[in-house]
Image 1 (cartoon, helix red, strand yellow):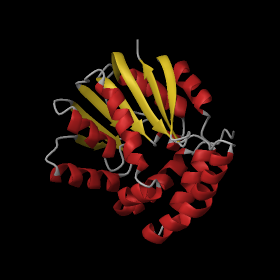
Image 2 (cartoon, rainbow, N blue to C red; image 1 turned 120 degrees about the horizontal axis):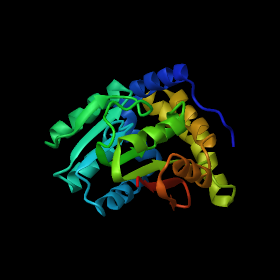
Image 3 (cartoon, rainbow, N blue to C red; image 1 turned 90 degrees about the horizontal axis):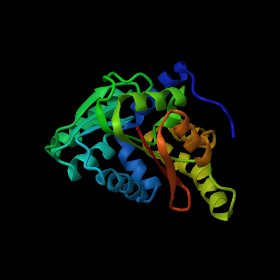
Image 4 (cartoon, rainbow, N blue to C red; image 1 turned 180 degrees about the vertical axis):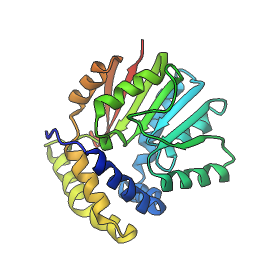
Amino acid sequence: MSDSLPSRSQEKSIENMFGDIAHRYDFLNHLLSFGVDIHWRNQAVNLALKDAPKDILDVATGTGDLAISLKKVIPNANISAIDFAENMLNIAKQKTSKKSLKIDFKVGDGQNIDFADNSFDLLTIAYGIRNFSDRDLGLREFYRVLKPNGKLIILEFPPPTKDLFGRLFSFYFFKISPYIAGFFSGRRDAYEYLGKSVREFPSPEEFTAMIAKAGFAKPSYKRQLFGISVLYYGEKQ
């Protein structure tokens, strides 16, 4: 595994890249995953439901899919959602307006969260932490803004496994999907970057250890669909 992480200047390029594909982002997520991404998010929502959190922060919310799913099933929750790409947030706001849902969307950095200590019962982040220039710092920020007994739920893509399924998925994910995405979005490089960032992300075991190192108790992970995606969990004591 590579220790490569995006620099702060590279993060700005990533922000611009996501801003450029915002208008096709949801469509491509569902197309390239054959709709399975919805099921992965639903598993995170079901895990969140166990504790009926009242105050929720969704980091790297993108176009707001996970925040919207949480609001639908926990309508009384106060949900804040941050992302560094304003174009993504604009689409998220349009979606919530159409659905008459109240979510507080703000431009924000998951490595420097603009909320006080002990603010949230639950913090979620779906497929965003691999873009951080300092993941350990991000995890410490997550811990800081959670209340005692608060829960952390992370969805992320791990490096593909080396078995037959992993090799087949790697061929599709790294060789085929960037061309499909480039055709529809005009930014094939965005999905080539996605593949690179997945290759360089820690293994589930390594990332679970990072969650524990940040102070979280009961760190765990669950592979989704043969390990294409992983659902991580931790608790602040």
